[in-house]
Length: 339
Image (cartoon, rainbow, N blue to C red; front, side, top):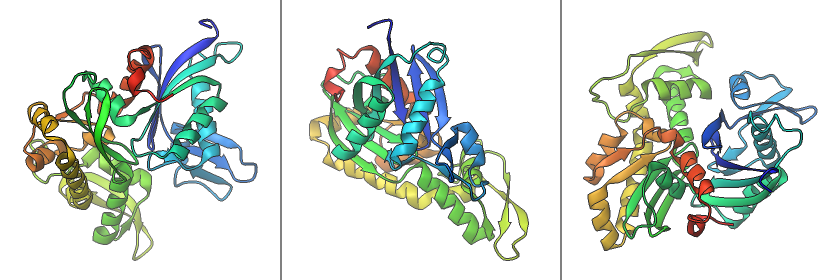
Protein backbone atom coordinates (compact mmCIF):
# COMPACT_ATOMS: atom_id res chain seq x y z
CA UNK A 1 0.00 0.00 0.00
CA UNK A 2 3.01 2.29 0.45
CA UNK A 3 2.81 3.73 -3.08
CA UNK A 4 -0.90 4.39 -3.01
CA UNK A 5 -1.38 5.71 0.50
CA UNK A 6 -0.33 8.88 2.27
CA UNK A 7 -0.30 9.88 5.94
CA UNK A 8 -1.77 13.19 7.04
CA UNK A 9 -2.50 14.71 10.45
CA UNK A 10 -5.32 17.24 10.77
CA UNK A 11 -6.10 19.74 13.50
CA UNK A 12 -9.68 20.64 12.66
CA UNK A 13 -10.08 23.87 14.56
CA UNK A 14 -12.98 26.27 14.97
CA UNK A 15 -10.77 29.17 13.86
CA UNK A 16 -7.95 27.54 11.88
CA UNK A 17 -7.37 24.17 10.22
CA UNK A 18 -3.81 22.88 10.08
CA UNK A 19 -2.57 19.84 8.19
CA UNK A 20 0.77 18.06 8.57
CA UNK A 21 2.17 15.89 5.77
CA UNK A 22 5.70 14.46 5.72
CA UNK A 23 6.47 16.15 9.09
CA UNK A 24 5.75 19.62 7.69
CA UNK A 25 2.79 21.92 8.26
CA UNK A 26 1.54 22.12 4.66
CA UNK A 27 -1.82 23.80 5.30
CA UNK A 28 -2.56 26.54 7.82
CA UNK A 29 -5.78 28.23 6.84
CA UNK A 30 -8.80 29.86 8.52
CA UNK A 31 -11.77 27.47 8.85
CA UNK A 32 -14.13 29.53 6.71
CA UNK A 33 -16.04 28.63 3.54
CA UNK A 34 -17.76 31.02 1.12
CA UNK A 35 -20.83 29.53 -0.57
CA UNK A 36 -22.95 30.73 -3.50
CA UNK A 37 -26.53 30.76 -2.18
CA UNK A 38 -28.08 30.12 -5.62
CA UNK A 39 -26.11 27.00 -6.52
CA UNK A 40 -24.84 25.91 -3.06
CA UNK A 41 -21.37 25.64 -4.61
CA UNK A 42 -18.25 26.50 -2.64
CA UNK A 43 -16.62 29.62 -4.12
CA UNK A 44 -13.69 30.02 -1.77
CA UNK A 45 -12.16 28.51 1.34
CA UNK A 46 -9.60 29.56 3.94
CA UNK A 47 -7.77 32.86 3.53
CA UNK A 48 -9.76 33.85 0.44
CA UNK A 49 -13.11 33.23 2.17
CA UNK A 50 -11.84 35.01 5.27
CA UNK A 51 -11.23 38.17 3.19
CA UNK A 52 -14.90 38.05 2.14
CA UNK A 53 -16.21 37.75 5.70
CA UNK A 54 -18.56 40.60 6.54
CA UNK A 55 -18.29 42.03 3.02
CA UNK A 56 -20.59 39.73 1.04
CA UNK A 57 -23.78 40.51 -0.90
CA UNK A 58 -27.00 38.50 -0.74
CA UNK A 59 -25.87 35.77 -3.16
CA UNK A 60 -22.79 34.81 -1.15
CA UNK A 61 -22.68 33.61 2.42
CA UNK A 62 -19.60 32.86 4.49
CA UNK A 63 -19.86 29.90 6.84
CA UNK A 64 -17.65 28.67 9.63
CA UNK A 65 -18.31 24.91 9.42
CA UNK A 66 -17.13 24.28 12.99
CA UNK A 67 -18.77 25.84 16.00
CA UNK A 68 -17.49 25.36 19.56
CA UNK A 69 -15.00 22.80 18.32
CA UNK A 70 -17.55 20.51 16.64
CA UNK A 71 -18.94 20.23 13.11
CA UNK A 72 -21.99 22.47 12.80
CA UNK A 73 -22.33 22.44 9.00
CA UNK A 74 -21.64 18.94 7.75
CA UNK A 75 -21.61 19.70 4.02
CA UNK A 76 -19.41 22.78 4.28
CA UNK A 77 -16.91 21.07 6.57
CA UNK A 78 -16.59 18.11 4.23
CA UNK A 79 -15.97 20.35 1.22
CA UNK A 80 -13.46 22.37 3.21
CA UNK A 81 -11.49 19.28 4.31
CA UNK A 82 -11.61 17.96 0.75
CA UNK A 83 -10.32 21.19 -0.79
CA UNK A 84 -7.59 21.62 1.83
CA UNK A 85 -6.32 18.05 1.33
CA UNK A 86 -6.30 18.60 -2.43
CA UNK A 87 -4.29 21.79 -1.95
CA UNK A 88 -1.37 19.87 -0.39
CA UNK A 89 1.40 20.41 -2.97
CA UNK A 90 2.78 16.83 -2.99
CA UNK A 91 -0.68 15.27 -3.27
CA UNK A 92 -2.05 17.40 -6.09
CA UNK A 93 0.77 16.33 -8.40
CA UNK A 94 -0.50 12.75 -8.28
CA UNK A 95 -2.58 11.40 -11.18
CA UNK A 96 -5.07 9.74 -8.83
CA UNK A 97 -6.04 10.53 -5.27
CA UNK A 98 -4.21 8.22 -2.85
CA UNK A 99 -5.97 6.54 0.06
CA UNK A 100 -5.19 8.37 3.27
CA UNK A 101 -4.24 7.33 6.76
CA UNK A 102 -5.35 10.17 9.02
CA UNK A 103 -5.15 11.24 12.61
CA UNK A 104 -7.66 14.00 13.42
CA UNK A 105 -7.86 15.77 16.74
CA UNK A 106 -11.17 16.41 18.50
CA UNK A 107 -12.21 18.33 21.65
CA UNK A 108 -12.32 16.25 24.84
CA UNK A 109 -15.96 17.09 25.58
CA UNK A 110 -17.23 15.76 22.23
CA UNK A 111 -20.21 13.35 22.02
CA UNK A 112 -20.34 10.00 20.19
CA UNK A 113 -22.55 11.50 17.47
CA UNK A 114 -20.12 14.36 16.86
CA UNK A 115 -17.22 11.91 16.77
CA UNK A 116 -19.00 9.92 14.09
CA UNK A 117 -19.59 13.11 12.07
CA UNK A 118 -15.85 13.85 12.04
CA UNK A 119 -15.01 10.25 11.12
CA UNK A 120 -17.56 10.11 8.28
CA UNK A 121 -16.28 13.40 6.86
CA UNK A 122 -12.78 11.94 6.80
CA UNK A 123 -13.90 8.70 5.19
CA UNK A 124 -15.68 10.57 2.41
CA UNK A 125 -12.44 12.30 1.42
CA UNK A 126 -10.71 8.96 0.88
CA UNK A 127 -9.68 8.30 4.48
CA UNK A 128 -9.06 4.54 4.63
CA UNK A 129 -7.68 4.42 8.16
CA UNK A 130 -8.96 7.16 10.46
CA UNK A 131 -7.83 7.71 14.04
CA UNK A 132 -9.08 10.39 16.41
CA UNK A 133 -7.10 11.93 19.26
CA UNK A 134 -8.28 14.25 22.03
CA UNK A 135 -7.01 17.82 21.73
CA UNK A 136 -5.33 18.16 25.17
CA UNK A 137 -3.56 14.85 24.55
CA UNK A 138 -2.29 16.04 21.15
CA UNK A 139 -1.21 19.35 22.71
CA UNK A 140 0.74 17.50 25.44
CA UNK A 141 2.54 15.35 22.84
CA UNK A 142 3.23 18.47 20.74
CA UNK A 143 4.70 20.35 23.70
CA UNK A 144 7.09 17.44 24.25
CA UNK A 145 5.66 15.90 27.42
CA UNK A 146 6.14 12.15 27.83
CA UNK A 147 2.50 11.19 28.36
CA UNK A 148 3.30 7.52 29.08
CA UNK A 149 4.97 8.36 32.43
CA UNK A 150 3.11 7.89 35.75
CA UNK A 151 3.36 11.62 36.30
CA UNK A 152 0.66 14.27 36.24
CA UNK A 153 0.75 17.15 33.74
CA UNK A 154 -1.87 19.83 33.30
CA UNK A 155 -2.59 21.24 29.86
CA UNK A 156 -4.76 24.28 29.11
CA UNK A 157 -5.53 24.55 25.40
CA UNK A 158 -7.35 27.78 24.52
CA UNK A 159 -8.60 27.41 20.95
CA UNK A 160 -11.18 29.26 18.88
CA UNK A 161 -14.33 27.53 20.09
CA UNK A 162 -13.40 25.76 23.31
CA UNK A 163 -10.90 25.90 26.15
CA UNK A 164 -9.77 22.39 27.04
CA UNK A 165 -8.29 21.81 30.47
CA UNK A 166 -6.95 18.32 31.19
CA UNK A 167 -4.75 16.50 33.65
CA UNK A 168 -2.85 13.74 31.85
CA UNK A 169 -1.00 10.75 33.29
CA UNK A 170 -0.18 7.23 32.04
CA UNK A 171 -1.46 7.98 28.49
CA UNK A 172 -4.90 8.91 29.74
CA UNK A 173 -6.93 11.95 30.70
CA UNK A 174 -7.51 11.71 34.46
CA UNK A 175 -9.82 14.70 34.75
CA UNK A 176 -10.85 17.25 32.17
CA UNK A 177 -12.97 20.34 31.85
CA UNK A 178 -14.10 21.76 28.53
CA UNK A 179 -15.73 25.19 28.42
CA UNK A 180 -17.04 27.15 25.47
CA UNK A 181 -15.16 30.31 26.40
CA UNK A 182 -12.31 30.80 23.93
CA UNK A 183 -11.13 32.91 20.99
CA UNK A 184 -14.59 33.49 19.46
CA UNK A 185 -15.99 34.70 22.78
CA UNK A 186 -13.02 37.07 23.20
CA UNK A 187 -13.77 38.49 19.75
CA UNK A 188 -17.41 39.07 20.72
CA UNK A 189 -16.34 40.70 24.00
CA UNK A 190 -14.29 43.21 22.01
CA UNK A 191 -17.22 43.93 19.62
CA UNK A 192 -19.56 44.54 22.57
CA UNK A 193 -17.02 46.73 24.37
CA UNK A 194 -16.51 48.94 21.28
CA UNK A 195 -20.29 49.23 21.00
CA UNK A 196 -20.95 50.20 24.58
CA UNK A 197 -17.90 52.37 25.25
CA UNK A 198 -17.22 54.05 21.90
CA UNK A 199 -20.61 53.75 20.13
CA UNK A 200 -18.65 52.09 17.34
CA UNK A 201 -19.98 49.08 15.45
CA UNK A 202 -17.17 46.83 14.18
CA UNK A 203 -17.13 43.43 12.45
CA UNK A 204 -15.54 40.13 13.44
CA UNK A 205 -12.43 40.64 11.34
CA UNK A 206 -11.66 44.02 12.90
CA UNK A 207 -12.23 42.64 16.40
CA UNK A 208 -9.92 39.72 15.64
CA UNK A 209 -7.26 42.21 14.49
CA UNK A 210 -7.61 44.20 17.74
CA UNK A 211 -7.23 40.97 19.72
CA UNK A 212 -4.02 40.04 17.90
CA UNK A 213 -2.39 43.47 17.76
CA UNK A 214 -3.28 44.95 21.17
CA UNK A 215 -4.87 41.99 22.99
CA UNK A 216 -3.97 41.75 26.67
CA UNK A 217 -5.53 40.37 29.85
CA UNK A 218 -3.62 42.54 32.33
CA UNK A 219 -3.50 46.33 32.45
CA UNK A 220 0.17 46.62 33.50
CA UNK A 221 2.53 45.23 30.86
CA UNK A 222 6.32 45.55 30.79
CA UNK A 223 6.44 46.45 27.11
CA UNK A 224 2.88 47.33 26.06
CA UNK A 225 1.87 47.29 22.38
CA UNK A 226 1.24 50.61 20.64
CA UNK A 227 -2.25 52.07 20.43
CA UNK A 228 -4.26 51.01 17.41
CA UNK A 229 -6.68 52.98 15.25
CA UNK A 230 -10.00 51.22 14.69
CA UNK A 231 -12.50 52.13 11.99
CA UNK A 232 -16.17 51.20 11.97
CA UNK A 233 -19.67 52.66 11.87
CA UNK A 234 -20.82 55.26 14.39
CA UNK A 235 -24.01 53.89 15.99
CA UNK A 236 -25.44 57.36 16.61
CA UNK A 237 -24.85 59.13 13.30
CA UNK A 238 -24.38 56.13 11.01
CA UNK A 239 -21.21 57.66 9.58
CA UNK A 240 -17.91 55.80 9.32
CA UNK A 241 -15.64 56.84 12.20
CA UNK A 242 -12.27 56.06 13.75
CA UNK A 243 -11.20 55.71 17.39
CA UNK A 244 -7.93 54.78 19.09
CA UNK A 245 -7.81 51.75 21.37
CA UNK A 246 -5.06 50.46 23.69
CA UNK A 247 -4.30 47.22 25.55
CA UNK A 248 -5.84 48.49 28.83
CA UNK A 249 -9.27 48.73 27.19
CA UNK A 250 -8.92 45.25 25.67
CA UNK A 251 -7.99 43.87 29.12
CA UNK A 252 -11.21 45.40 30.52
CA UNK A 253 -13.24 43.95 27.65
CA UNK A 254 -11.87 40.43 28.16
CA UNK A 255 -11.91 40.43 31.95
CA UNK A 256 -15.20 38.52 32.50
CA UNK A 257 -14.26 35.73 30.07
CA UNK A 258 -10.78 35.32 31.55
CA UNK A 259 -12.30 35.02 35.04
CA UNK A 260 -14.42 32.11 33.74
CA UNK A 261 -11.32 30.39 32.35
CA UNK A 262 -9.55 30.90 35.69
CA UNK A 263 -12.54 29.38 37.52
CA UNK A 264 -12.54 26.36 35.19
CA UNK A 265 -8.82 25.80 35.83
CA UNK A 266 -9.39 26.04 39.59
CA UNK A 267 -12.26 23.55 39.30
CA UNK A 268 -10.08 21.09 37.33
CA UNK A 269 -7.35 21.47 39.96
CA UNK A 270 -9.86 20.73 42.73
CA UNK A 271 -10.90 17.48 40.98
CA UNK A 272 -7.30 16.26 40.59
CA UNK A 273 -6.25 13.29 42.75
CA UNK A 274 -3.72 14.35 45.45
CA UNK A 275 -0.74 12.41 44.04
CA UNK A 276 -1.18 14.12 40.68
CA UNK A 277 -1.65 17.51 42.40
CA UNK A 278 1.80 16.99 43.90
CA UNK A 279 3.21 16.42 40.40
CA UNK A 280 1.47 19.51 39.00
CA UNK A 281 2.89 21.58 41.87
CA UNK A 282 6.35 20.61 40.59
CA UNK A 283 5.73 20.73 36.83
CA UNK A 284 3.34 23.69 36.59
CA UNK A 285 0.69 24.24 33.94
CA UNK A 286 1.27 24.25 30.16
CA UNK A 287 -0.61 26.65 27.88
CA UNK A 288 -1.31 25.90 24.21
CA UNK A 289 -3.65 27.16 21.49
CA UNK A 290 -4.05 30.63 20.00
CA UNK A 291 -5.43 32.06 23.26
CA UNK A 292 -2.06 31.40 24.93
CA UNK A 293 -0.68 34.29 22.84
CA UNK A 294 -2.75 36.89 24.75
CA UNK A 295 -0.33 39.22 26.51
CA UNK A 296 -0.09 38.75 30.26
CA UNK A 297 -2.19 35.57 30.37
CA UNK A 298 0.63 33.49 31.87
CA UNK A 299 1.29 35.97 34.71
CA UNK A 300 -2.41 36.34 35.45
CA UNK A 301 -2.98 32.58 35.66
CA UNK A 302 0.20 32.17 37.69
CA UNK A 303 -1.11 34.71 40.20
CA UNK A 304 -4.46 32.92 40.43
CA UNK A 305 -3.10 29.36 40.79
CA UNK A 306 0.26 30.06 42.53
CA UNK A 307 1.84 27.70 39.98
CA UNK A 308 4.45 28.27 37.27
CA UNK A 309 2.83 28.66 33.82
CA UNK A 310 4.66 27.67 30.63
CA UNK A 311 3.52 28.81 27.21
CA UNK A 312 4.29 26.28 24.46
CA UNK A 313 6.57 27.51 21.69
CA UNK A 314 4.36 28.29 18.68
CA UNK A 315 1.23 27.56 20.75
CA UNK A 316 -0.98 27.66 17.63
CA UNK A 317 0.83 24.63 16.23
CA UNK A 318 1.24 22.58 19.43
CA UNK A 319 -1.90 20.51 18.78
CA UNK A 320 -1.17 19.73 15.13
CA UNK A 321 2.48 18.92 15.95
CA UNK A 322 1.30 16.41 18.56
CA UNK A 323 -1.19 14.95 16.06
CA UNK A 324 1.67 14.59 13.56
CA UNK A 325 3.89 12.82 16.11
CA UNK A 326 1.03 10.41 16.97
CA UNK A 327 0.59 9.71 13.25
CA UNK A 328 4.28 8.83 12.82
CA UNK A 329 4.21 6.48 15.80
CA UNK A 330 0.72 4.98 15.57
CA UNK A 331 1.80 1.75 17.30
CA UNK A 332 3.37 3.59 20.23
CA UNK A 333 0.42 5.92 20.74
CA UNK A 334 -2.27 3.23 20.23
CA UNK A 335 -3.51 3.73 23.84
CA UNK A 336 -4.47 7.38 23.16
CA UNK A 337 -5.82 7.00 19.61
CA UNK A 338 -9.50 6.27 19.05
CA UNK A 339 -10.05 3.99 16.07
